[in-house]
Image (cartoon, rainbow, N blue to C red; front, side, top):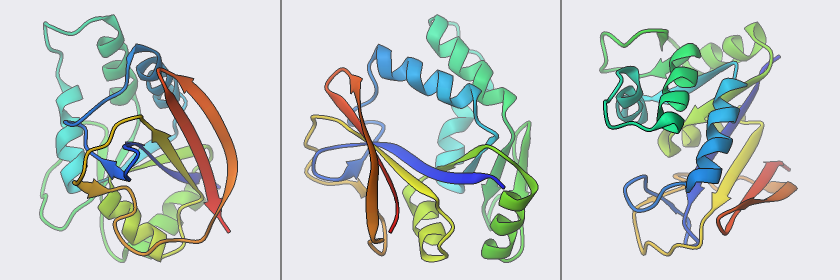
Length: 176
């Protein structure tokens, strides 16, 4: 059975914003390696549309960005959306009851499936389907934006804390 994890870069005050800050070179390399090892990614519509950036090569990319794009393109993606009618390559729309669809997805695969986006993570948290939360804590204060935990606050227990370089710490939590 696959394990679902929700992981994002987060500011010290609890917000996620890819425009406000991002990973340095070392953490970006971590994300490339992590993406290569994934069984796939599960996205809500908004984050999926942002991530579609990686579907096409851009001449200004350096080698790490080309590596990430290749890893991202190679993985299956499942997209939860009521409004999208078509999606990009190597992606499948998740239809029907969300809880049933994701339980079936987990049962049909092994390895790790990344959950992308705080709104989707909120729904999956409420259904008790996320197995791990990975907070990549950056020394940045945003003062507002989208919170990492967009809905109910789950009861959690710390399972690991790992320095990631560039003043970032990965905090890994499992539901308590």
